[in-house]
Length: 433
Image 1: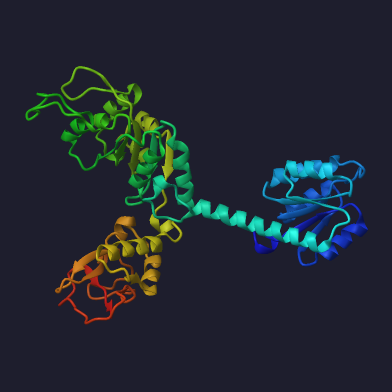
Image 2 (image 1 turned 180 degrees about the horizontal axis):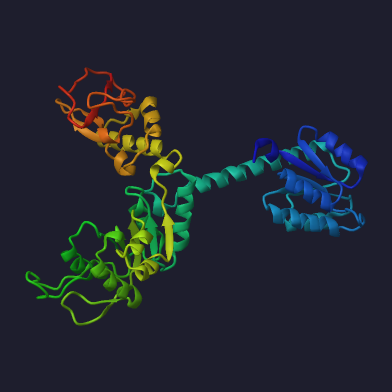
């Protein structure tokens, strides 16, 4: 809604002469008029006024207040934040108080002082603006459980609200997104927002563990189950009992284990490797992958019945390149973190660096941004580096577009200490002296 529309005033008055007089006395405001309930609703939907002044006695029965109260209820039903100022007769205080009880902002008895009415309308507009700003700031504010997520993108804010909504249930959540989009951060946020926050959050990467070890890692094993099994060991599922288990890169789970995981999801019991007894486990499952599981199902590499067990709630996380303002926000966060680690609080990114960060496509997501590396100078001083493969417009190992803009301002002048030459595969940034 633009500023003019947000400052629009609707005057509802059935007496043409009084309507004209009110509009003239309130000429500092952009106003529209209506003479009955139907025309008032038309103006309300067309102009979305933030403030309304209205008479309770409206056609077809001006001597009754029924039309006025009906209009008041409809205005607040359309937008509860609309400030309605009721104009009543001199001896009609009871109806005025009733209107305030129903949600009217204020009331004035006729005849009224135009200056006082104008002041009250101005205060009403200011209150509306404060409420909108407060709402906007609340939407931008991240829940404590998701404080590790750095974002101001509207889609990510919507995802955060979804995480909060589903956290109270035990439904299995599937997080889909490219590598580095923050799937584990969201999974931890889901756990912290749930009633299981006091218990463990356990994560396992299904792609990082060899197939012959993954079963024992997930389900545990009994003593003597195989060579080297010198004692009974709990698996990740049992360790997460009462809490949350994150199955990262679930698309890489071997087909041989998918049936056993499906049985656990159905029965909520496990058998350790080498065991003979079923063990009940109460755990919330969150899974994540960068792969298209529906394609894997069609190719026969992922069980379709397991997919539907895991995909009770599916959340698609947008890549960094699609998130408005997040690349620059992350760059500032990394620079701040590095400056604190190196005890150099005045270190900032130059405007050229920010422009280059915003222009880049970031194929490596946050991990690409995380390739901002610390390299030791010959005399112990540190500089920020980007690995070459993540930088736009590079024209070879010796130079590239946008490199000179990536200077970190150290905030203090001193003698420059240069490397004898750039390391292969990296761009060395100049240091502002």
